[in-house]
Length: 139
Ligand SMILES: [Zn+2]
Image (tube, rainbow, N blue to C red):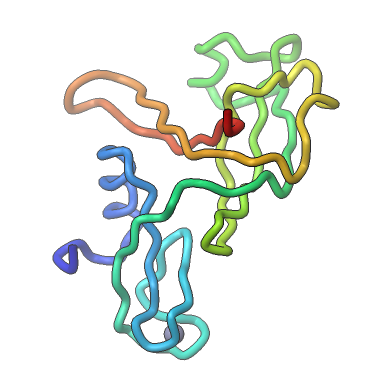
């Protein structure tokens, strides 16, 4: 996979293939998500793509009552909020993403530390298809 540059465009391409990829520094073995091309620890540029386990735990979350247009189009609004959160993966990296499969109308039911698993939300068809990162509670 070394032919993929270490950019968000590559990251999104992997998402489209339903893979949550991070970059790892071959020099100091630190893992980065979102991916980085240059290691901020040792300034090395010997990065490699690694597929994450997609498993982790919920570190923080918030509810969105007024979202972007495409979320309003899906029926989310003041009376029907959705949740986004930060998940700490088993690899030790944190990433923010939408949370699905949680009851955003009942935030007390959403537990910090709960095991989560990556999910991929596809929007649109054909060439217009876009994949968004999400996490759902581990069943
Ligand atoms: Zn490094």
